[in-house]
Length: 168
Image (tube, rainbow, N blue to C red; front, side, top):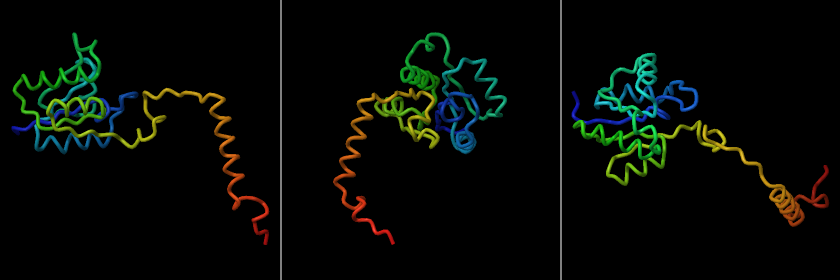
């Protein structure tokens, strides 16, 4: 059994947050890390749901799981994750690395002396592609201002006026 442990946040690394579908890159990471680390999982799901999903995906090479149960259900995400990692440490796991998809909780872990790998998938590169995105309609005044600025820039730029174009 390896001495070093790596913590993986299930949601956002192994599992999509909206559909609970597996993330292939995260699954490959899980299996790669399992050869050199005690894998420890933290999740925002209760025990029954997560154990079922892990068994379906044949993810059974981890040493321990900290579920979202009891009092943790009411904690904000970053604090809950910190409590889960602290619970793993109290069980005498030597945590050398934490994989987390949330920059806020990664910063919190870093502030508390942990080594962090923040894994952000390219599927979330644009804000509107993220599951927590809220579409906000631009105010009409902002649209009008943009149109006026574009018209001014077009007027200033002589290269796009009709008199300078060559119609050969």
